[in-house]
Amino acid sequence: MHRKLTEVSQTFDVAVLGAGAGGLSAAIFAALEGARVLLVERCEHVGGTSAYSAGTTWIPLTHHSNKIGAKDSHEKVADFLDRAVGNHSPAVLRDAFLHAGREVVATLEDRTVMQFRVRPFHPDYMYELEGASCFGRALEPVPFDASVLGEDLKLIRPPIPEFTVLGGMMVDRDDIAQLMKIGKSFRSTVYSAKLIARYYRDRMRHGRGTRLVMGNALIGRLLLAALKLNVTILTNTETVSLIGNGDGITGVLLGQDGNERTVAVAGGVILATGGFAQHKAMRAAKLPHPLPEFSPSAPGSNGALHELAFEAGAYHGETAAQPCFWAPVSRRSRKDGSIAVFPHFVFDRSKPGIISIGRDGRRFVNESTSYHRFVSAMYAANRDGSHIPVYLVADAEALKKYGLGMIRPRGNIRPFLADGYLTKGTTLDELAAKLGIDADGLKDSVSRMNAYAKTGIDADFARGTTVYEKANGDAAYGPNPSLGALDTAPFYSVRLWPGDIGSATGLVGDENGRLLRRDGSVIEGLYACGNDLQSIMGGIYPGPGITIGPAIVFGALSGRHAARRKSEGARAGGGLPSAVGKQWKRVRASGVNP
Image: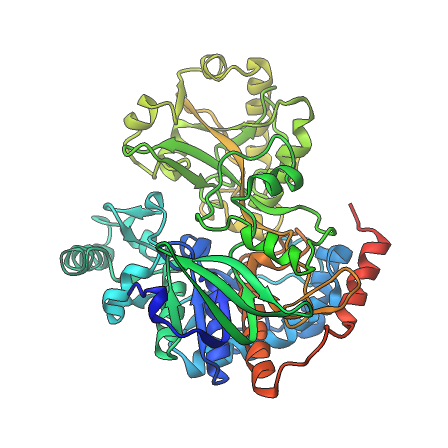
């Protein structure tokens, strides 16, 4: 559990600052090399935003893809990424990720408790591009019995409450499918009863559920792996400064509970703090306006270590198509006064009987596109201030069957109406009046969608045409699983706002996560991974898990390199010119595609 700063050693081989998926991966791979590793987390919990997430991990070409018969290749994936990302990031870094990914996953599973699995159907988001795949690239963590962690279970950041049931029980897509059939299927009823009984037993014994799924399972497994490798973990600990000798970084100054301690680091310091999501000045400078007010990201990613990295000569990348990764979010006040921020990933936008409109009452986007593209479209349409927020509109049948945001299928809607999260109109005119939007535009949008539902063809935005889009619809609905009429009154709406779910702009590094100066030279002893590192996806979102996958792989590469740097003896003098640094300079000089 919580360790005191004054009790730990003042010398380590590798120090990792930040304990999300990337930081834990860096610590694990450094420790697997025999390094003495210090993992520092400024918050009370480990896991960062990864613990909140679905835990999906986009790492192609692993042995898991082979097991389910995915006919994939390095060339196919590389070409897909070239088409999706283009010159928003150097191709050499994407190749480094693809070459290392298979071995990183195999090492984690062979040498630690980490275990992944694949779904037989889990398509890339940009499925319209040649080289996309409908399965084999996106991994997910196997559910984890975290009772083996004992008291260290309390270190894991709990999931977003609105993603749980019964006051904290975590569920994944398999569980949801079973819970929806309670009373309809004997097998599902038995499954659900066992699941619920275990949850309540866990709460009595451990204070929370110990069956972890999705992001919590990912973090739980990585945490146990780190503990088994004797990684020293400090929580509630700030990094006050990076210590260097003019040529590189040789240590850190840490602070905890009013105490400070200098820790010498022989191999390297790895930044894994989650990016600048909570840094007001960086947000104002880099994110589009109006600035997103609500983010489902975890606290802790305050960008303070980016400022320290700048002092050491590092810099932010400038080639990303978007400065961060996006998801539309709805918001609601909780009983304790905090704000619940709910990301609308796939559960509602693509379902029949649901559309999204601006203040003019008209559709502006293919609702079944990825959450990242959805928010990009919000900003593109908001030049006159009419599309922040936008409005997700459903008829009574769609609301009952699919839910809407925080409202679950067949859920009680009265509390949501009472606090204004959900708006109801007995007619479209009444709904428009309550929302303050154009009624004629709304009625026209509904009329057009009702016609498209009959033909199965969305003549305005081609909704439901790709494999990915159809997958997020309702397979039992036809002729297009994503198109349905809004013809059952009353009508309902939830407001959607832009929400950032992770930084795409980060510190520029090379194929081992070593941070670079603008002249392309290496800052010796200083690394980054996760959202602290400029995204190899260049602010594009080609598939599920494209933040966590690279975070784990570059965490592994940086941790391993820092450990080996120590064992081989750190070079004296400044960093040598980097081939990747030269590639970054060429990318900046060439400009980027819009």
